[in-house]
Amino acid sequence: MHLHIMPVLARLRQDISEILTPESIREACRRAGYSWRNRKLDPVATVTLFLLQILHANTACQQVVQFGQWAFSATAY
Image (cartoon, rainbow, N blue to C red):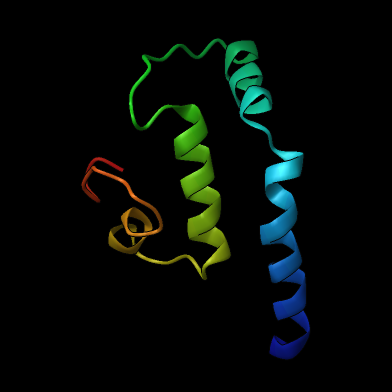
C-alpha cells in the first residue's frame, strides 16, 4: 500500500497551491470571523505550513520551520 500512496501524495503536493490560493484562505478566515495582523505567520503561511507538515508524514514542528526561508522558531509555529 505504501508504494501506491506515494504518487498520490506527490500529486497532492503539486496541486494544493492551485486549489488552496492565498485569497481563498484569507476569505475563509474572514467568513469565520477571524481577524489577524500582517505578520510572518499570517493565516496563509500557517495553513500552508500545516499542510506541508501533514504531507511530510506529520513531521516535527522544528522541521516545518526548515521547509523554507522562515525566520521564526518552532515554538512560534
